[in-house]
Image (tube, rainbow, N blue to C red; front, side):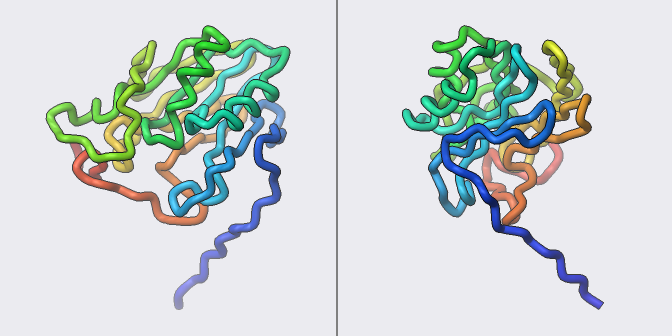
Amino acid sequence: MAVKVPFLKDLEFEYGVSEQLSPLIRRVIANNPSAFTFHGSGTYIIGKGEVAVIDPGPLDDEHIAALTRALKGEMVTHILITHTHMDHSPAAEPLKQLTGAKTYGFGPHGSGKPDLQLEEGGDMDFVPDVTIMDGDVIVGNGWTVEAIHTPGHLSNHMCFGLLEEKTLFTGDHVMGWSTTVVSPPDGDMSPF
């Protein structure tokens, strides 16, 4: 007997507004809905006072302004990038310029498979200030994140586990409304 899996696609939110999801997690959704972003890219803020930002999002002035409002009065200490698609990493540079925080990621677009010609849609400008690998632990004031290398969607894809709340930020490795896209040659389900 087949079991129906309910997909809850309704989400109440307001673009550009910071929403408290848990004691340590807030989310701001960019106004870039599409087949690949669903309602829009989610940017996550973890911590209080001294915070990390996960996936600053697209290079969009309205979204960057919304992040600036959400972060008012706080110090951004880390900018964490799950992967280098245009809806996840491009806003890292302006956020870095505004805050002075370092960027953390597995590497530039295609860094998991450096000998391949890369597909369009990648953020070719992103290079992390700090290269992180599977199992690395990033510690902030009141929060701890473990980096988990999850190639498939892209070779440089990382998930981040917030240890204090047992929460996993999956980037595009897991999506609630769709199966993730694995686009060769960089996206690849075979082992390295």
